[in-house]
Length: 166
Length: 375
Image 1 (cartoon, rainbow over the protein chains, first blue to last red):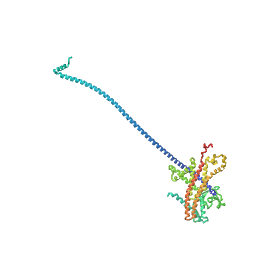
Image 2: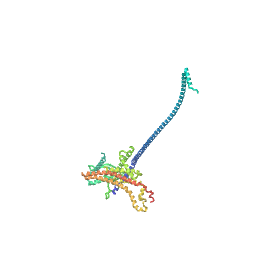
Image 3: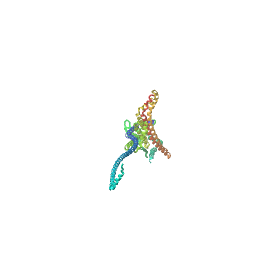
Image 4: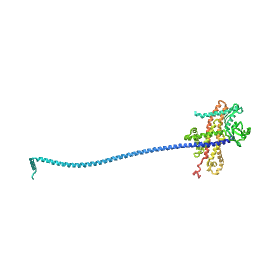
């Protein structure tokens, strides 16, 4: 202990304290403060970057899920549209067929009516012509038969012969 | 090649230290004095452990028997009823007395004493000089080393700080080595012992003290004969700062615990007999903690230097082809261990300082527990 006290130099102690405090201040001012804040900033930066990456990953997943959903929806919509289109087509075809049938029926009915009336007219004309021809034939036949006297007489006779007095 | 760089440097240091001691051994033979080599080495070690008023690199005895010192004289600053400033070269390494402003001063065993024109020094029975001692504010070898260390630290760490700005937050050069240490001190010393909330205000002190002690310890391993951290005044100054910071940043809880360690756990009449013993112990603990700090660092560095130099000294005592290389090898091994000790002591000093700060700034939150209020 005595050696320790003997070794103790007050001047050195004063120098040491002054120099150390000065060094502490200068280092604090020019080194520790910027170093610690730089390290801190860097650590914050890394932490933030990691958080951002995590966020981005999540976002990415969301986007994928969204796009899948959209795709699914679009597919569904397309299906629905196709189905609708098919239905419309079928309906249109059915309608057209129906209409055509009606139209046809109508035409047929008209045609029938025309044919009937034509037929009637034709029959009426034929009747007239047949009557005319019959008269002409009868006329010709009569003219033939009554050309000479004998025949006339014979006819009279025949006719008279048919006629029986009652 | 690179892997053995440090080892080579250390080997070189050991060899160099051996040479500087060899000079002493030669000195002895040239002097022809009756001192044997063991005493000579012991005195050399003693001299090395002390602070000195000049920055000597080595000394030898010339052929004509004259002592030649290679080194730089440093300014001597004395307060002796007025300021006396002169160069330490005036002392001629204690061989002559120095005159300044009508006063005469003598240098003996690294201390300056006031003396008369003839340089008479009176000694008491135990051999201590009884002459008056002026207050010595000299820029000694230790002061120079502290300034060099301080400048080195300023340069290293301010360039590290600047490299962040230049290199987008990534350190360059030596900073790559020092940055992890800074982070280690923050994350493994300050944060766990002081706590997340308050550790920041202690960081500058902890970082400064760690690197200051470490660098000075490392300088002590160079063959320049530097022993700054093995000086009691230095460790006292460092421990005093820890002590002052601990107590000035102490919270109310800390002081309350000091004078009332048991708190509400016991009625006041029960405390009296216990506190007669307990409170003085607590108060003594205040002093003992930093005292242990200062003695630990001082003793460790001092002991390391003594062991190392003794082993080197053994080489000259053995003077044989077996003993000397063996002791050289031992000295080299101890140098390696001392490198570890240099770091370890800096770590321990920082760690314990941080722990004391942690105790002092701790805030207790268990006091207002409603469950326990009625008990």
